[in-house]
Image (cartoon, rainbow, N blue to C red; front, side, top):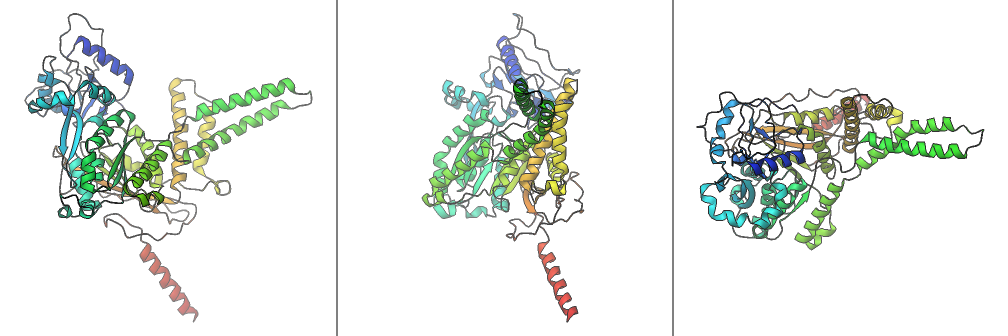
Length: 580
């Protein structure tokens, strides 16, 4: 991702701040692309060891940005005795007008003012199932002073140190609106049905539901669903795991009381994408080295009539197919994260009901809330994770994605990936030699280029290796999805907005069975806007439509299987009458 030209930057320096900032940048990588904050701010810096969280950006509009804002990244130099005593803070904004929002933060960023430091705060977040006490990373307000010492003890800071420079530690703005929409429009529950009394039946409307939240951050949304009676696994990067676990413990009694003992929540580490390597070039190097060593051993022991050279050449030609096939098998196996998640759901089922332990625990919902922010390089990996999650319950599992529209059509590019996947031709691995498989051919060709003719430039080698890994991952996703296709619908939440009064869109994603014969083309791909639809993926053979339940939401596009069945019956009856 190319860094946009910044319109404003504030530089406040200190001796200790410079050292900590430099240390943080070196750990995260100076060339790493910045992330989008909820306020449109791009940054990857820490303030004296504390993260530049979105809540540090005040809403005041009285500050005027510099007349000639710097347009380059500030170069760090070793601290000198002449530096001021303030903390380091570099904020890069996409437009000059947005700089005005940070006036209050700039005025308070002095070393002597303890409120200038980001700190751990607890906020009660409203939900249809009860308030969720949520520890998050923010700038304290004036009335937070009494609670700061207790919440920011040395022990807690040590426990949560890894989360401080993560955007996921911030309490994002869409949780309450997303929970209300889930309750009313996804789960189809009236708000009046909830009772404050801890009665098992009315107070646990989500009992029996298994839910995974990806990119959970502080875990607020998933914990609220557990209060409603669901079995929930909240997941995020390992740096945020201690924070999620803390909030789970903080709300444990509330979950038990509100759900009547049936709702449970557990936090797990989950980095999107496979947990096995997709570095095709490295595996090829290892295998070729083995072949070369074996050839050398045979050469030392060979007799004069042996044709070692030709056998070695034949082995080299088989290495690519062998390596790629092995890597595909590894990618099609459940990832370590998925295995741990399924085990956690079984444990939660056993904890909520002794009889449920012996039953299957199908996944019903995968939920994301403000997880698609400025990280498009991670989306193919996210698509892999969604594919393996939905594949555990392909006819019923549904993905619900909420996006605050800080940028127009935030989710549009990701949805285009679904369209691109639908355009791929699925051929089963058993049929590819007979029918041909362009995807498999592309995987083998990309791997062969890595092995035989690497570019001389470092950038060219990187691009070639990335292409080989990408084609391998795409093939694995299509094979796991099989005869299904992606279907989705997007709409604006009409009855609520984010806490910043921004529009929120919700996208419902699921799989449907493909029924396309050879030669039929997919519909036009996503071009932005609302109410997107995706048609069937191209297939080398017709796939019969399996009986499906009635959809949970009539807004979701369905296959026209009923009219098609009526037409087939009518054709058969007309044919019979003609014969008579």
